[in-house]
Length: 253
Image (cartoon, rainbow, N blue to C red; front, side, top):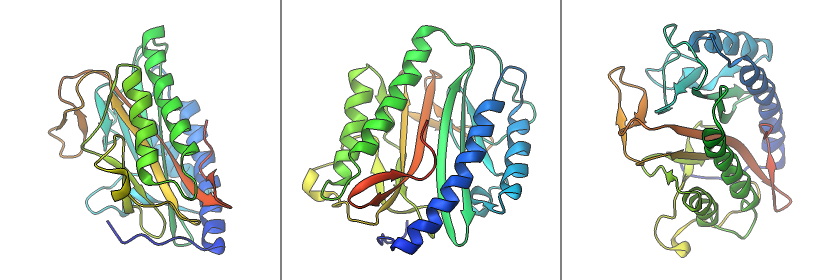
């Protein structure tokens, strides 16, 4: 993690342009995810669209990682390599995470999509989207990062699900991962957390599981999945605090 600094109006304008490009890529990938599509198909489309946008893939700048996307299915939560042998089928939850680098700045987002899932699983996904919406609403000048985490935790736990504790959202800007960390649960005392200033830019990420929040790293050295094998999901957008209020840079839907 790198030390946090609030962004200037000019820097946020660049990040907003970057975020708009990422939003278009994300929308296309969301529409592409479907039965019979492979994780590699998603990766190929992402690479093509990122190039078309005149940007670079943020994740390819992570040491040791060679792909533009992370693609996970069901118990897989984050950092999944987009493999050709991963073919989506009806009943799956497919999660896609990606970032864009443009004019010296990063933006970051992710989504989870159910493929003809039952009403119970659709309800599980709806809770994550709602948690992200409520977390974004708390991202305003004078609040603390604690308030963001609290909104996520309350929404997830009230539905009977488990917020992930081993991974967090984060600041974003010139680096893909900047301070502060923004957990999906309340960590410690409110007064110990950072006061949100004008010009803050955060990648707010809701990560949660149907069962236990405990995670395990799979044999490929990257994929992180639930230890109990139950479904998980994630929803993430890049937010800037502008005129005291949250502005979604990556096209929340």
